[in-house]
Image (tube, rainbow, N blue to C red; front, side, top):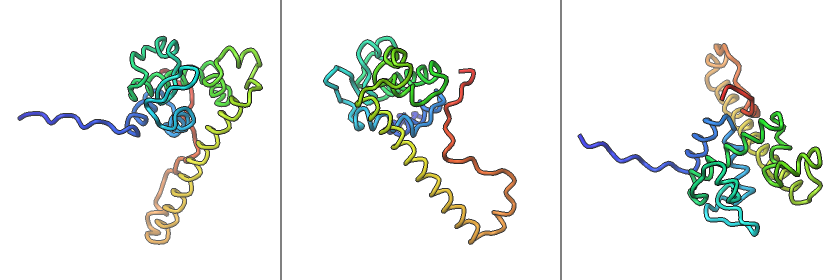
Length: 176
């Protein structure tokens, strides 16, 4: 029997796989990509940042990303870098995002988010987009739950474990 060729992964599947591997919510990665490149894998910033997560060539090289325009490699490197920044700033998402945008040296220089309009707008944009996704998921979950309760009340009353809130962020330190 000849094995079937592997189906190429969609970008969402790539983001889910990499996010889960690095314990970063895939919705956060999506929000970073949205802010960084608008999902354009060929994007190049005026400062030279490349690809979906806009990695600077030096940063990409340090992360072992050979081709920053390859979506899978770029998301892997960008997510790993975001994870490193989260760990560096004790899982303070605002500081980690500011460092992703302006560089860790600027976050240390200003002991927090630098007073740059671009960086402040960048952090606010990602957090707003991420929260919007989580709120939508909560509303869908609540609507599904109320529909299940009205159409099948016996299922609702036999649940033993509360559902995990869609707003919980998988950004906890672990043994990774």
